[in-house]
Amino acid sequence: MKKRFCWVLAACLALAPVAAGAQKGPIKIGMILPLTGVFAPNGQDSLDGFQLYLEEIGGQAAGRKIEVIVEDAQGKPDIGLTKARKLVERDGVHVLAGIVSTPVAFAVQAYAREKKMPLVISADAGANLLTMPGKFLNPYVFRVSQNGRTPGAVAADWAYKQGWRRVAMMTSDYAGGMEVSGGFVRVFCARGGRVVQEQYPPLGTPDFGPYITNLERSVDAVVMFTPGADGLRLARQYIEAGLKGKLPLMDIYGQATFEPNLPQLGDSSLGILSVLHYTAAIKTPENERFVKAFRARTGRLPTDNGPDGYVGARAIVEAAKAVGGNVEDTEKFMAALKRVKFPSPKGDIALDEYNNVIQSMYIRKVEKVGADYLNVPIASYSINQFWPYSAKEYLAFKSNYGELKGKMTDCSKWLEK
Image (cartoon, rainbow, N blue to C red; front, side, top):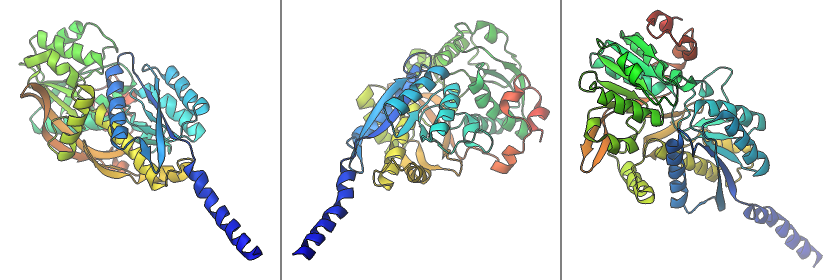
């Protein structure tokens, strides 16, 4: 009798950890996004894509419910950091996600490192140095959206192949502006092209007239990066100035051709070129299903932030499932994040050795398809974050992009090693 009692007791003790595990609370995800301010449309799309994926899987992973706590960073680094602290220290989240602007990304990533908190960047924040060897490389950062330089790098390669040799650059005057435009300049110089003019309008510029008037008219094209609502204002004023039919416009990162802008621009947007890692016009079953679901949920076409948020949610869920829901084991959870690989609306997704996404990049052209104005892909590239260089080749360049502001016309500086 005594022997049987011991066996029953041992069995109960063996089952105890399972029962305790089953009783764990929800997996908490803290979303930091701009839901007000100039970047609000980007933040809302990322949030909608994130929530769409969680709805599709019933809001749980590995038997645990998923709770998403959303905070508005307003595109401001100090507010973003305050919100991160609140999410981690008061709400007890297991992972942070979101992030649109580069300054917010730098502020939050430092805190994530301090607290050993996984941060899945699932929106526009493309600060190159966060996922490249150097002092800012952060093992707690996993980026599934894109880095800043690759859209410009792809645009430069494509532009040179079209015969463009001299271009004018207009980029917003903040850290992200150089992150994005620098990707174009270095590759364009390496191919044999040249930027002959650079202009830096501040974020939130209401009137781009002086910059448009000042544009060098002998160039082959104008290359631009003006994020958020600035993109729409610049595109509209560029068209109103009568330049669209005279100087091709290449919109790096697709901010002027942001899908909600296109109905406002109407037929005047037709033919504008852009480059980005996504377009709702990608013809794959995965994307066509996603576009239909996103449109049914929101009443609008997804921008790139929509599938970025969707992929971010799936990456977290896939990693949570890989560790049996035990996201409290941060090291195992992060190891699982490193291994995520799956098809997505953007194309196939994987992470490189520095936790940055490997994916496709698309050259796009505005066309009217039925009742919709769409960024139709006309070329695609399969890239990693250093493309067209190896990591070793890229890191051999002497100067980073931020150090070369005001020197876009000097290719020797950009190619110096």
